[in-house]
Length: 338
Image (cartoon, rainbow, N blue to C red):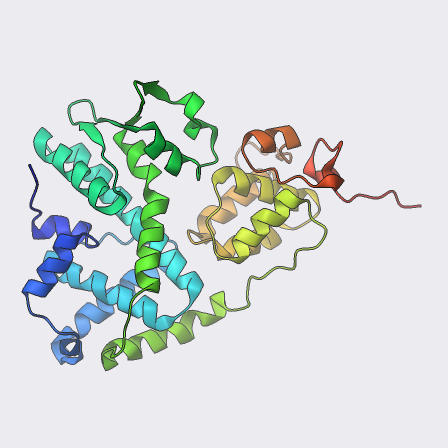
């Protein structure tokens, strides 16, 4: 049995094939975006994009049909802006938006059957995962291979198979965990869709808005946060390289990087600047977390750099010969001054 989504669901999940079919059925052409009455959709898409670049999840759903078109325009804007970091950041926040809506829908939907069909539709269509969802208990089960394929990208201890409930070849997760598990995959899917878009005749109105946004944000992403990586230990180098590429670090890697930089004498502002290339960067949250680690917020205890053993257990160790006999990354490259 399948489920046919209405405009309210398509507005929340506009990357599904049904949303594309919906737009095609309207016989809407790209050139129509240059009509004066379409400017509000372009402005809405620009607002959505700017929210994401500021580290906010855009959740406006006051006009369902318009929101489906807004998603399409936002992809065209991102493609036309042509900045890799913008594409990655907006893709991540679009995935976080879906995560928020899906978790909410599954919590509030009274129909057990609709819950199950919605989960199965999204997971099967987007990720080719056959997921069994018990709508009464909100527990999902997926095969061990499907789980491991996705959990391998998660560095926190809770995602290791040994820490999961496993029975008869299936891993059991609550729905929030299942949605979180595929967030990065959805982010990559949206990013790939943007990257592979073939756009030959972008409407003038969209191109003008993209030029405006590029001028506004290019300085934030072009050659701004590329930090020179010197004699840092390989675990720190790896994290820095990921940051420089605009990739998203797991919490454990951020903790390691921030505590290390503070330990070698970097100021809180220096550390905050490093994280500005993160796709999900939010200055207010980052500042609080860095100041908390520095002992200036919360418990007022300065946090230490994690030990090498801990980093190994979290799959953050990239040891080289020079790491031999070290117990903490802070020891790497230190020489006695005579």
